[in-house]
Image (tube, rainbow, N blue to C red; front, side, top):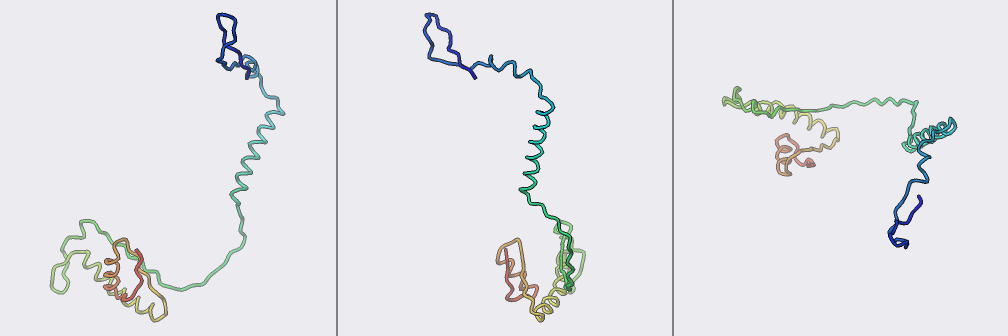
Length: 150
């Protein structure tokens, strides 16, 4: 960009300079040649390939089969207000649906945990509550001495 001095009234050069685009005004009207368009496309393509190369894509043609046996235990309970309805009886007392669900789960869990202990499998209980809650849940499930992760 060329700089021109601001005009003054006494013929002196002003201290304030501003830029002018008069020298490059005609460049905006020019169009690229086919070679220039090809070079611009090649630049964008090389940039895209460079970014893909940075991601280090890998193709794997091998498969590995692993035979494993085990028991997956997943318990999902509905904790909405409807679980507070006392429409069951347990040991002669009316109890809510959540208490029944906990009782059913507890009975099977103790046996599973005992079986895993005999097999030498260490049990870890993951809870979203406090440490005291986790320890109480572990005690109720028959996991005395279990590691509790919060």
